[in-house]
View 1 (cartoon, helix red, strand yellow):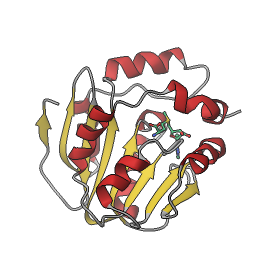
View 2 (cartoon, rainbow, N blue to C red):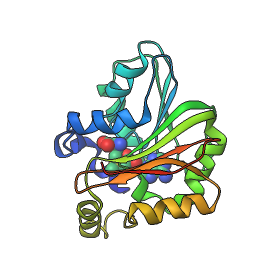
View 3 (tube, rainbow, N blue to C red):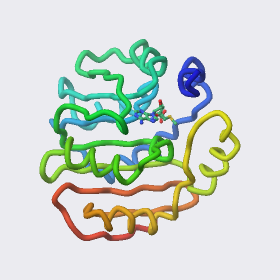
View 4 (cartoon, protein in one colour):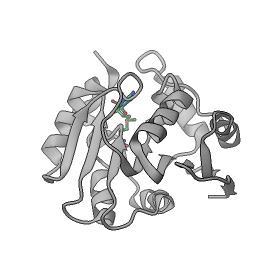
Length: 202
Ligand SMILES: C[S@@+](CC[C@H](N)C(=O)[O-])C[C@H]1O[C@@H](n2cnc3c(N)ncnc32)[C@H](O)[C@@H]1O
């Protein structure tokens, strides 16, 4: 069975969500009221209330995940008629629709084709001037150690130092607006049609 299907029932209990960290990561995306959001790798939907709080009521949010069981848990927890759940593997499938913002929270290391997948999401699914945020509320070394321990159960690639990952993105023509990593977090903000990478010490 797919690892995330296996753990879906207990994900809420086992994965801690630090609201202050999430808030500071989401601040980088600068969501505004009325903006549409695609939440990639939504899992049980932990980010949905945070997104809703920022974009306001009744604004459509699309939450996508490749795990049937994660989505089932998300449906049980989410009492929001304007969240649309989609089962899809974003690496293999093309998603419909364009959004003001795309969030990838705690999912990027599980991509087999990280650069191609981000390129596809940016070109196919962002409005011109939209933003895509890769975000983690833990540091790279901690995450890589966790993923090493789980390597016989779930596919993951080690996160690269953020500067190296940004270089890979820039090489294919992606516009990285800002990036940063610390012992506590990791993020890269990509803008469609933007320019200029600036590093943060966050
Ligand atoms: C570590 S969990 C994080 C879930 C959620 N974002 C959270 O923070 O609780 C990663 C999620 O990404 C999903 N996922 C992994 N690869 C995916 C892909 N290629 N397409 C869609 N979802 C994917 C998994 O099924 C899983 O639910």
